Image (tube, rainbow, N blue to C red; front, side, top):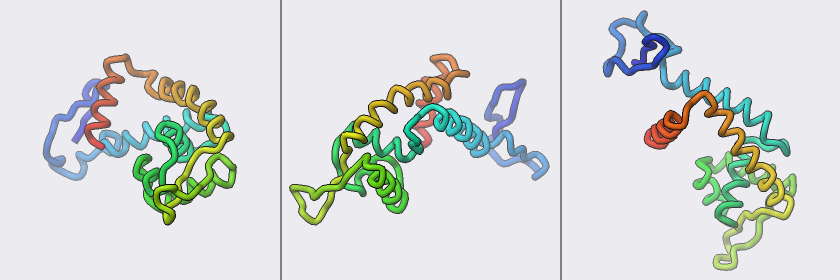
Length: 156
């Protein structure tokens, strides 16, 4: 369990609390991650522009970074399951930010790619995304930011 100690979180036990009454929700990693996620989501919604959701931005950013790919690969690259990535791509297609075309190397497969308006939207959004990350991490000093990102990568 993680306990607060003078305002600092410390892992002081490796075993469950002695009694259920020792359990404190606000000291649990899942609860804290949810609070961080809510804070980041609010910062994201305020700053990203173009009415993009986090999943839509992730898909656009990955297509911008890597280029055309299958919908399944885009889902893997953005950590979205099949149903989620399908909905994201459908909404981006409706907004003319992406399109699908046959894969020249495999006629049974279609590739998802950015359109010119999609490329423009992601180019506008990337500077905002940098600022969103900066605002999310604002309470931390540079060493803490590096440590947090390293630890988050380690537990994913």
